[in-house]
Length: 174
Length: 281
Image 1 (cartoon, chains in turn purple, cyan):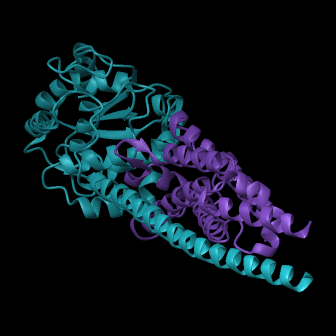
Image 2 (cartoon, each protein chain N blue to C red; image 1 turned 135 degrees about the horizontal axis):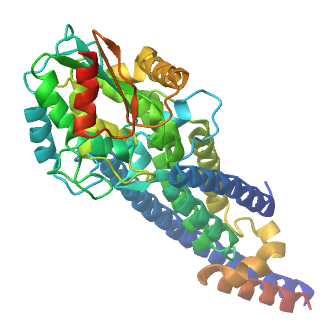
Image 3 (spheres, each protein chain N blue to C red; image 1 turned 180 degrees about the vertical axis):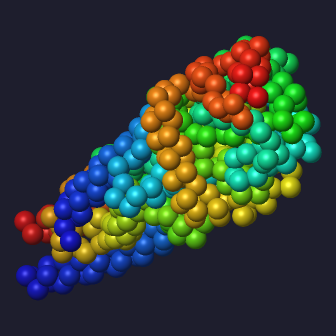
């Protein structure tokens, strides 16, 4: 997949996740019932003992998480920011996995908002892994075109060599 | 000449290619090391979050007020000890001739005023009326009256967590299945938070249950989660109150051998309540 498309898709998904987290945080503090297709299950989950982490509502943690992920995606596309996205989505994936486990085996109720967020975080995490591993300029053929961008922002070691290489080749060609 | 230049260029290209490969290998290694670093860091964060989350379970009950849970429990215990409970909401001898029914909302501050003694401040920060304690000591403990708690949604529905009403009221009835409804009701009022605030959640309800000596918490939780007749009872209570024309809590209804006294809407004074009881005795 094209790196730009992947990045945009991830930004889109983060925005959806952010919207869910904003909604659930609002519901938590306003004390209203979340819209729920499965009867009272959302309320059960939202008011359970696992809906807070040391007093902080997990919906708010999710909101902070999505903002951080979004920030890491909107920052200049560098290896560091890709790594940050990976780390953040891994935390989100891991913790929402744990919460889903609690929903299934401790609360015995599934909140579709939370489940949607868990799915989004899983996809974001997978996207972040692909994005990081297929990082800039792995294939030199394509890299020739993508190099100026990547070289400008990546870690210094390789671009220096590459810039030198292309400069030399150009010089030779003339 | 051309071939010599070609060879030179080729050798240079090969050298560059070799350098590039070495650099790439180093870079890949560095990238994997960073990846491992971030994964370890993320896992540490996740594990920490899970540990904190799991500790929630064992932590002290949510305390909306500064009153100590142990003092509350001791006071409630002293008030109710030795008085039989039946059904899932009745305090006192089930054959007592007088029935005093309180329509209440566990989050309502006027009910708190009714329920608390003058030695304890209500959630509104003023001493309780002491009327319910007098009623219990004078009529219920002596077997003359039974006190019944029924649900009517007022403050909760207008408050910050309207969706909690059926669950919080059913939580008391679930304790009632173990003849401890009144311990639950009294503790709820003792630890009531400010009206309209968001203190009532499952954690708060769990905390109250865990404070009641001798209550089987697992059974209580299971009844609360699985026995839908409890929330049905809560909503039936509300309907009955509306049919009777009661719209505020507490509403106190006194019945006896001579019929039913006029319902007292709002917190009754002790003389008012005594007069009502006498009128039907």
